[in-house]
Image 1: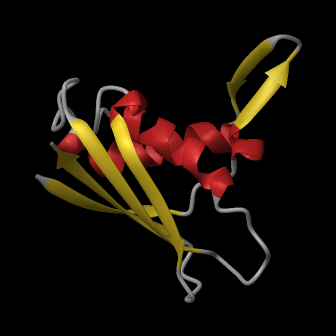
Image 2 (image 1 turned 180 degrees about the horizontal axis):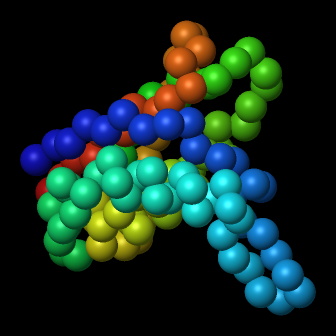
Length: 116
């Protein structure tokens, strides 16, 4: 079973989390992104149970031509998908890949696939 999701460009890990002393919490931007993903993915909640092994493929369409580290997108995107209950836990992901696309569309296309 595969699903394909089109989501807004995620905040980087640097702007997703905030710190107050020893306490980490979601930034306002992070919370807005997570809420957007939850609303977009509600029909897929519970689709992959906790025993499913998963492959996640991401096509990243940056918002503009600025230099960006793609690895900074993983954490906020994967955490938001987990919060949306697309899968039980991100430890289920055995394969994870990302590809930068040439057009600037301010989005990511995420394919989640069950693997054996």
